[in-house]
Length: 254
Ligand code: BG6
Image 1 (cartoon, rainbow, N blue to C red):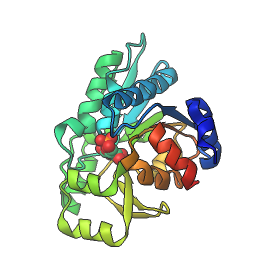
Image 2 (image 1 turned 30 degrees about the horizontal axis):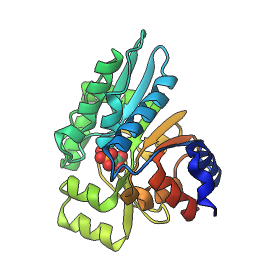
Image 3 (image 1 turned 90 degrees about the vertical axis):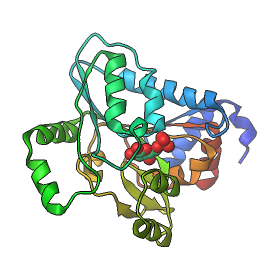
């Protein structure tokens, strides 16, 4: 393919949108791995995309990660009620990567509300069953399931497993099953087969499938394989905000 014709990023975006079959791919200049500016642009574009979908009483459920975090600070105040919920319970991440922290930021910037979800990472089946019966937790879970919009990141399987301090047995399994990517706690291989799922409450893949709006934000050449794999199973209503480095790899992969 003649990549030189894609100096125009929106043409590149349209081309890979067609190839991948999702709703829309927005491409920002550069490579987020190399340039902090590109990382900022991803946040700006993703923020703009979310902002355009907000209307009175919109509910948004958001995963953790540095990409969703960078979008939070680019949201502007809205003159109506919106509510943000963390998409899933504890996934073992550091505080700054946690969805609870990011939804608080999003609520601060939009002037909206947020709900926190306090779920420990490793709980027994019994504790888990008891927790989901708790009225406070139950009510947040209902809001997550009924949210109008999902915002999530896409990560590298290895990187995410390390960041979450995943135990050795699970890491071995991810390796054996050739996991390449991860999104909202689901790990998948190159073909998009789900090979492992972090057990926690909140948004499940079947809930994502039925959402009206899904915004995925992920960039950086090192994530290209993960993103290409995820796009094989991404619901078609997904809008992806990514960068040029990934977009060029997608052009080759599809
Ligand atoms: C996690 C999300 O917190 O962050 C995942 O649950 C996502 O959906 C991951 O894959 C990506 O993190 P980052 O920092 O690369 O945006």
